[in-house]
Amino acid sequence: MNPDDLNQVEHEQISTSLEVERLEVNLFRSKSLWVPLNARGVFGGQVISQAVVSATHSVPPVYSLHSLHCYFLAKASPATPIVYQVDHVRNGNSYVTRAVRAVQNGHNIFIMVCSFHKPEPWQPSLQWRMPEVPPPDQCEDEVDLFTRLIKDPKTPQRNLKLLEDILDQRKRSPIDVRLAKDHDISEGGVVRYMYWMKARNIPKYEAPFQKGILAYISDLRFIATPSRILGLKGRTGPNSLGMSSTIDHVIWFYDHDFDTGDWLLYEMESPRIGSGRAVVHGRIYTRDGRLIAVVSQEGVLRTNIRAPEELKQETKPMAKL
Image (cartoon, rainbow, N blue to C red):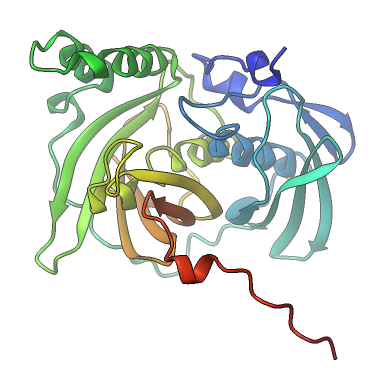
């Protein structure tokens, strides 16, 4: 049997996707893993969020997660549970630090360092203003979008199976997504994509779990931003996407009272693409305009353009000192 056949569908309840089993004081294990359509491995947002939940269990409730920095070291298979090992790096008065290693089949597949902080709401505050976009009720739900495309007689027959698979995945997803602005170009020439997102049918969870859900949401549509800006389409031909995969992911949380069950605006842009890599920056706002999180990510981005022949030649090993 192909191990990937054991992959579970994306759960309709986000709480199930984030759930981990506590094995020991600082040792946790995933209960479910999901591989998105055409992805190389388990959804990165799920790994991040499960690591966040694991780390949060090791911190006194007076501290609130304010940042995380993580690296994806290898793709994760859905066939084997991921074990999260939490290390107490530092316990300070205002800040505490945790490191989380995600291990599968004896190999490190992911590492995260996260910091927790006693909030200081009396300190000065400043933020960028939320972009002007249509409200969520005026934006098309992705389920409706793909249903419309499937029914459209102009849609090529060869695309129908893929669209049907995407539609099925979107129906199962615990996250509702609506495109707010597509390929928006600012006065300075910055190309941006903006989405309304929210977790479906959830109660008002406490702040620590809300941040786990936000970590899950933060990886949705993010790595696709550079390829969309470049106009890469399909999987064959020189202008097609050859490979796209996350290298690292960073989130800074600047609010501790938000509801992922209500609409959040996710603004995405890519300031630099080159050498087979791309950087993406994002900002997540509440519906009323509060900037609650800033996100950055670097990923592998390769087209199907072949390297020049002279670069394929094996180089002689350098002499050792």
